[in-house]
Amino acid sequence: MEQASAGAGGAGVHAADNVVGGGGGVGAGGGNVQKEIPSLSFGAGGVAHHAGGPTVKVLYCFSCGYRQAFEEYQRMINERFPHINVVGANYESSFLKSKLVQVISIGKMVVIGLLLANINPFSYYGINTPNAWRWMTEHKLYACMMTFFLSNTIESQLLASGAFEIFFNDVPIWSKLATGRIPNAQELFTMIDNQNKFYGNDLYGESMHTIPGHPAL
Image (tube, rainbow, N blue to C red; front, top):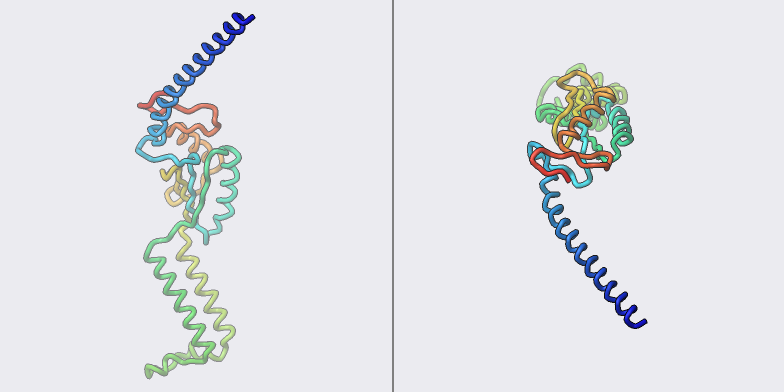
């Protein structure tokens, strides 16, 4: 009985040694995998992938009312590609237009303030008061509302770029400014699929596409 127990114990020790040895092999293999992973974090062209997966960024014209369109596309992309991050932001207008909008906005507030305070700025400079200003002082409420809404309309027109620009990992894949239209859902899905294959991302978590120059996992 003692010999049998000793034999069983020895077999257990040998089995444990084998398991430990196998673990060492896995560790070595894991070391090789860890060395390969950083190289896979960069796609062709040196564009880095985001840690949470690929990112689709949409720069849209907020003043054009494209926010609703962006939210609809965001929902569709998240349903079709749950591993993709979808972010959106307002498309910034040119520097000149932005500054012009600021000037108009400040001028609007100055005019409304002068009307409400019953101040005639022309008298300070010895200039004859224009008939338009006289009319505005006689109809302050209407003049303030007209100045406010007219200025807002001009500002909106200056900021209305009509943009709906789509980027995949900061690489442009669609431009409404260039094409004149927003892509339909099938076109968008096709572009995302193509970019996903190009960069080697697996959106469904089943397997990793092989990037040229890197060994398959």
